[in-house]
Image (cartoon, rainbow, N blue to C red; front, side, top):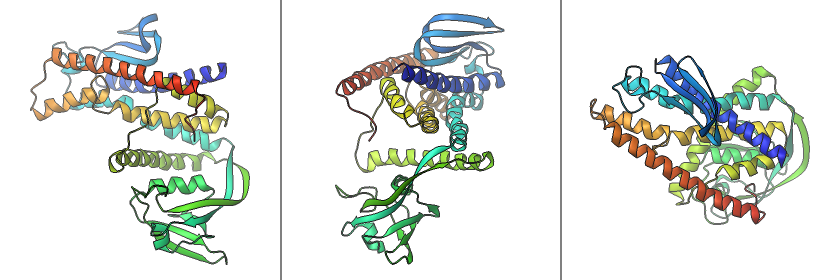
Length: 352
């Protein structure tokens, strides 16, 4: 329990600092005065002023902030609102951009650390009638060897590449029971019939072993760049599936993330780094959503100014909108946390 709390707080601090350093650096580059750089949310525990900026640690751990001069009011020199539209977009989006780039480092380190990998023959146990797999000529007993040029090491690999290619023609190399190979094209479905997967196959495995793998830096770095991009594609596919399948997203608050952290810790350092990378990407994208109080909400007002050819929404109205949005988010977090606690009391896990 103590280890989970310590690791979760370390993970949280890393992600918050990464986000706020992005805003801080972009503000300095844009000649915007940074009044306070805070870890946590007020009230303040400790603060130290260096130059024009107060560096503070605050009581509420779930967040951080970079308080800039005149975020809505352009009347003060050196304020954010007094800068050009391009400069404001840069400052407001820099935190999320850094959160989206951080996983490249985390995945690189993860791939370099020796870690266990399941190696197994991925076999087709059953093929649904009329499914894309049956149409492509895949049969029970076939072994999936490659997908779009990627070697399939286990069932999780196959699922990953299928979800990555929803709605797209996907090339698979299939090994038949007589060891002959066949190249087939399958298009994974966005909305499969109930009880079927995207391609309509039921999987099993044979000859399952565990191998220890690691990559040298010069291989891990480009692999992590590709993997980070693929995670963004998976995120896009997940969002599209909410609309295509008419399903609601599964929301998780700080308590749920702490619970997941405790479960991932058991798997080792490499999975923990990958988990942190996924949270960082989600944090970066979430902050860009057009929700008042978030960076994306502030970007909406900047873009509205551009559409209105320089005519601003009044600072008072914009500030009120962001305050209402911030309070609504706090309320949402409290509601989500209630259900997270209830789930933990029932002994349920978020992991499959």
